[in-house]
Amino acid sequence: MFNFDYSYLSLPEKFYSITKPNVNSCAKVFLLNNQICNKFKLKINKEEELIKLLFSNKKYRKSYAQAYAGHQFGYFTKLGDGRAIILGEHITKDNKRFDIQIKGAGRTQYSRNGDGKATFGSMLKEYLMSEAMHYLNISSSRSLAVIKTGENIYRTSKEEGSILVRIMKSHIRVGTFEYASYFGSSEDLKKITTYSINRLFPEISKSDNHSLTLLELVMQKQIDLVVDWMRVGFIHGVINTDNTSISGESFDYGPCAFMNTYDPETVYSSIDYNGRYAFGNQPKIIKWNILRFAEALLPIIHKNKEKSIQLAQSVINKFDAIWKKKYYGMMLKKIGFKNNHTGLYTLIDELLNLMKKLKLDYTNTFYLLSQNNFNKSQISSNSDFIKWEKKWQDSIKKTNCMKEAKHLMNKYNPVFIPRNYIVDEAIKKAVNGDMTSINKLLEILSNPYQYQDDLKGFMKPPTANFEECFQTYCGT
Ligand code: AMP
Ligand code: MG
Image (cartoon, rainbow, N blue to C red; front, side):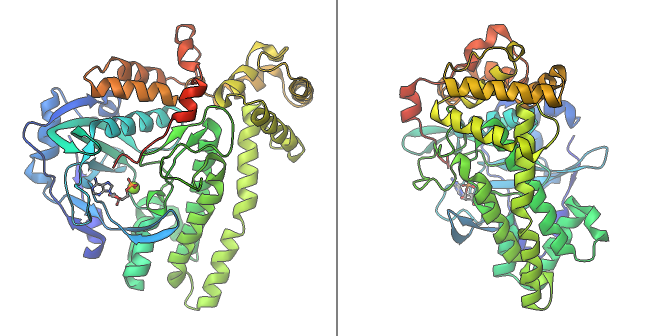
C-alpha cells in the first residue's frame, strides 16, 4: 500500500503544521483512477479500502498542511494550505517520492475565513483537467480519487462536499520560498533551498552556487511547462506565485479552461478583470513569477546584496531568448518542422495573425493542417490564408519530407481537448447523479492525439452564444 515517509517534517516547524483530516465515516469513493492504482502498485480491491487507507490508519498520524505565501494577482499575502493536507510522501519501489495530498478535508491552521471544504463539481473538474493534461503529455499533478464526504457545504447554493486525492512530485512552490524569505531567517531560506535541491534537483549539488542554479533550473522548468500550455491552448487562469510549483508541474485547476477561437486575449475566469492571466499573457506572467522567486532567493545567492542582484539578474536576462527559442521551436513542430530555424518564425506569426483575424479554432486548425496531404485547405477560403498555406507547403518541401512532417504534427497537435462546454455539461450531469458523460470524457481524453471517426462530435467548437457567456470560477 502507501509507503509513507515524512521528509518535509525535517524542515523547521514554521514550514508546516501537523493536521488531521476531518472526515465523516460515511465518506464514499466516487471516482477511482485505476491507471494510477496500477502505476503506484496500490492494490485497492474495494473502494472502502481506500477510505480506510486514507483516513483511519494510525500510521498516517503525521499528516501536515504546508505553510507558504504568494503574490495573488500581484499582491503579496501569507497563505498556506487552507483546505489541503499531505497524508505522507509515498516512496515507490524505484525510490521516487510523491506527495499524497487530500484537498477538501476540513480546516487547517491556514484556512483564514474558509471552511476548508470543496464542492463535488470543482473536485471533479480538477480530476478531469489534471488527467487530461497528463495524457496531453504535459507535466501535471495527478488525481487518484474523488470522494464524497457525505456532508452538504454552502456556496451560492447547497452542494455536496468532496475530497480530491492528489499526487504530485512535490507541492513546493515559488510561494514557499517567498514565505521563507519574508517571514523566516536566512537559515530557513537555506534549509528549504537545500531540501528542495535534495528532493527535486540533486544534480545541483555539484554546482558552485546552489541557489542561483536552482533559480535557473526552475526558470527552465516553468518555461517548458508554459510552452506546453501554449501548445494545446490551455489557460491556467490563476498563475499566482503560490500556484507555481518549482517542480514544473501544472496544478490547482480552479478557473482553468481551454481556448477555442485563437485570440491571445482570451480570458474565462470570472475574477480576472484585467486579463492578467489571459492566454497570451502567460509567458509574461511566468517571467514575473520567476522574478519573485529570484527576489526571494536574493539573501542567499551572495552575501553582498549588489552582487546577489547582479547574479540573479544575469539569470533572468536569459528568459526572453530561452522563451523565444522554445516557444517557436514548439510552434514549428505544430506545423511540421523539426528544425528550429529563425527564418521560419514569420510563418508562425503570420499563421497566428490569420487565425485571429479569421476567428479560427486553435485546436482544429492545427489538426486540419496535418490532414489531407497538405492539399487545398479545408480551413479557410480566405485568399491570404491560401497564400500562407502555399508558402508553408513550399517550405515543408524544402526542409522535411511530408511523412516526417505529418508524424511531428500528429505528435504535437491534439485532436481532442476538454472543450469547456463539454466539460461543463458533463460536470452538471455528474452533480445531478449521472456519471456517464464524465466517464466517457475521461476515456476520450486519455487518448487525445488519435482521431476517431465516431468521436467527431467532441471536436466541435462551442456555439458563439456559449463562448460569449462562459465563465470559470475558482471553485473555492
Ligand atoms: P487557490 O486559488 O485554490 O490556489 O487558493 C488560494 C488559497 O486559498 C490557498 O491557500 C487555499 O488553500 C485557500 N483556500 C481556497 N479555498 C479554501 C477554502 N474553502 N477553505 C480554506 N482555504 C481555502
Ligand atoms: Mg493554490
